[in-house]
Length: 198
Image 1: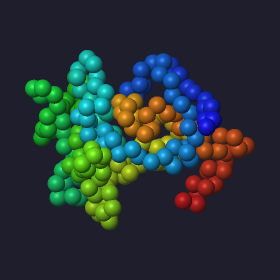
Image 2 (image 1 turned 90 degrees about the horizontal axis):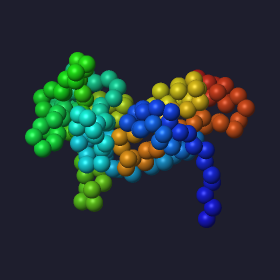
Image 3 (image 1 turned 45 degrees about the vertical axis):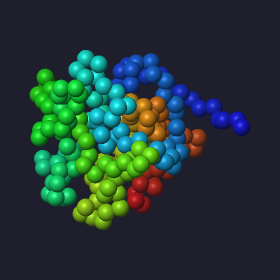
Image 4 (image 1 turned 45 degrees about the horizontal axis):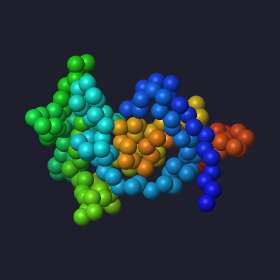
């Protein structure tokens, strides 16, 4: 079997938990969105044994991104969905509040209350199929390549690097997502017309 040769991109600096010099493989957006999650669960639990740690501070490099309601979704689900994790004796422990960093911002290492694992260790979301308003938050369903910010970045500058650098087991680790109409003339205009229909 002959595999297609893909173009690559070498990171010019540290970013998104990837180190400078990391080689990312270019994957068209359509192909990236057709890939299936491998159910590692690392995006739902910063304390996973495979989640990369900040070597200096021993805190996970993967944290809750995007907006987070003050009650951590308790009003939606009847219990907090996002459980803060902080440094404790022997590793990360659950806490009432996020640890505050030296810059005054919270370090939002977390574990999701609804993360479930089967007997083979594969993860699933306990609220994946729930109807609104119990539906999982938008940034859960859009991570890492399904959100509008991905499309916007591709239209703006032709690529998007998913924030999976701290998640080496993730399906989308080591990729740079490029335009779905990369070989088509004026693909950005075609995308803009399609976006108006949505």
